[in-house]
Length: 454
Image (cartoon, rainbow, N blue to C red; front, top):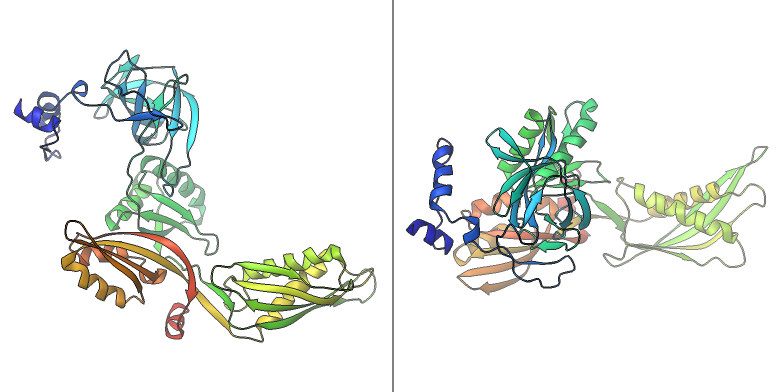
């Protein structure tokens, strides 16, 4: 038919309202759209990326199939919907599972052999057992433990890899917590199953804040995740504001002394250390320098001082935020032949850092995000004006084909937590952006009061 030819050539894309016409949709697909043997099989390579001869939809050809969806059935368990592009997939066959994803999707690259479980054809809620599925089929496979959505299934003797999916980056962070503390374990299991089902979902456990953050595509996606946790897995969750992972650093050099002296009879504790602290350029991290001379501190206890300093860095010294970008130099100290110990010098190192911090101002640092925004020319002014209200530093603008502009900017993370929603409103749905971490920067005094609730 003309419709079939137009669709096969990519000139026409039918849109059918299927909510109340599933049978009509199925008839249209089977009668009016091209069959699998009329379509080209996607490009495949070896698992090392070497070119491979093009495949065709032939049941006698090499096995090449793809996991197109993953679900969790309360009775059957994990179920993978698999599309067979070439060859024949048989129940109880061994297959090679290849999953190679772009960074940031939450799925690590993996290559592993598995055995196919029960095969079945799916029509609505009904499933009919199958012995095999030929090229062109879409079937359900139960209990594939390692296969993720987008993975390639092929023969273990000649493993193949289909091009990874172009998965949109989730840009809206939502912090969630189980409403009932007793549901924490249930929430962890439910989130793992949702991640397997939805490759656009990303999960982050933020060590410093202790929050569980789910990254979603937008508000509707976030609402869907919360609803599925409740209705499908019986876990009621509360959404919380995402807390910033703030940091602190020294605004100027300082010196400090740590003393641990407990000698009241019996085995005591004795350690004294003197340090200097210098601020380092942003992104330098932490450096520890040993400048002790003359054996004032035994060599065995130098690492103890460093460990104590590092532990205190993580805890923070003023507002409780970790310290970064400083150099600590151990310059002197004293020890006792009997009462000095590893723990005593750890404690002395921590006290010395706190003493140094008490003598100088500390600078509050906030996380910075690098934005790359793509926007039609007619909305560039609105985007730039909006960025100026977010304490942004615009680092460049560049014209792109088709009347678009590429805008790059550095923005405090607190100012763009809901930018995926805001840019849609500003550009009437025509703008897009990508984000990446760009380190930390000092917080202006006025903004610091706001961040700290002052």
